[in-house]
Image 1 (cartoon, rainbow, N blue to C red):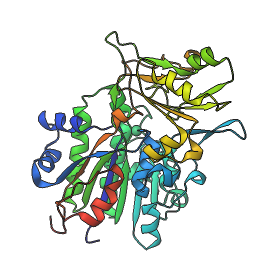
Image 2 (spheres, rainbow, N blue to C red):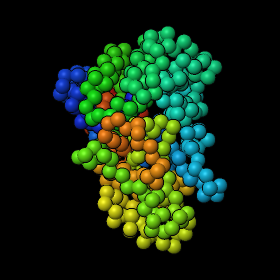
Image 3 (tube, protein in one colour):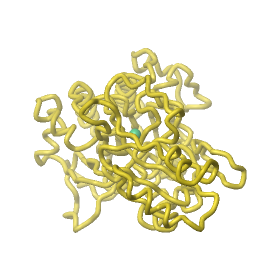
Image 4 (cartoon, protein in one colour):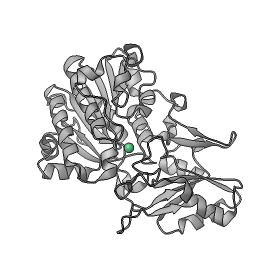
Length: 393
Ligand SMILES: [Zn+2]
C-alpha cells in the first residue's frame, strides 16, 4: 500500500440519493468523483439485502454462502430455537481487516451500531468501536480510549442521524492522528428509513469524505443495501402476514416464518422487510406451498432451500425450507399481532429484497485497468481500493 484505504459502507444508500444530493449542491466532493475525478460503478449487494450479511460480505470479500452470516436470525430446527447470529462464532471465514492486522498493518473499524462491532472486529488487532457505545470505549477492549474527547461530540441517540455523523467525524480524527493503513466505517440507515431525500445527511458525509481525501486516503464508498417505500397511497404499509396466511392454509404449528431483519432496533421498520424464511414441519408439500405463496399479491419470488442457496449464494444450513422475497412496494410479516407498528411515525420504508440490491460503488481514484464486463458487487470494495486503484491521483 502506498497510502491509507478507507472503505465506507453507507447504510441504506442508493445511487439516486447521492445524485440528488449532488444536484442540490449538497455534495460537491462526491459530485467531482461522479463527473470523472473518480470511478463509479453500479454494484449489487448480497441477498438478503440486510445490514449484517452485507457488512460481513464487504469485510470478508465473499458472499454469505462462505462467511455464514445471512441475517440477524436463523432457526435451529434441532433445538427449536430462533438463534441470533450477531456473535462471531457464526462467522465461517476471517476478515480482510483481521488479515491485514495480522500482517502488521494499522487497522481501524468504526460502526454506528454496536451490534456489528464484534463481528467486524473479529480476530482483528487494532481500533474497533461503535458510536452507540462511544462512552464505554476502553484501550483493552477497543484499542483506543477517550473517544468522546477526541471526537468532540456527545454519545448520539441510537435513533438519530448523529449516530452516523459520529462515525465520519471519528474517522477523520483517526486519520489525522493515528493514520491507520486500513479503515472501515459503517453507518446506520436510520435516516434512509425515514426519507429518500436526505441532503443534509449527504452534505455531512461529503464534508468528511473530502477531508479524508485531503488527508491522502484512497476512499471507496459503497452501501449494504438500498431502500424503498413499502406503503400504499394511503401511507399504510403493504404487509403480507405470512405466518397468519400459512396457519390459515395448513393449520397451526405446520410452518414457522422467520424474519431475519428482526433485531433489537426495530422501531423505524417494525421488523418488516422484503425477505422471509419458512420452515415446514413436513416437506412433502413444499412445492405446492411455494406455488401458493408465489401467487399472493406482492410476492416476487419463492425458492426452495437449495435453489435459494445457489441463486443468492446463501449458506443452505442457515436458511429455511422456503425463501420468500416480496416485491419493491411490499413487506412480509409473521403474524399481525407480533408487529408493533406504533413506532412508525412516517410511512414505512424498508429493504431485504432484490429490489434493494442496487448500490453505488464509488472511489476517489481512477482504476489501473479498464473494467471488463464485470458484475460489480459491494464486496469488491476492498479489492477495488487495494488492487485496482490507480497509484497516482
Ligand atoms: Zn442496513
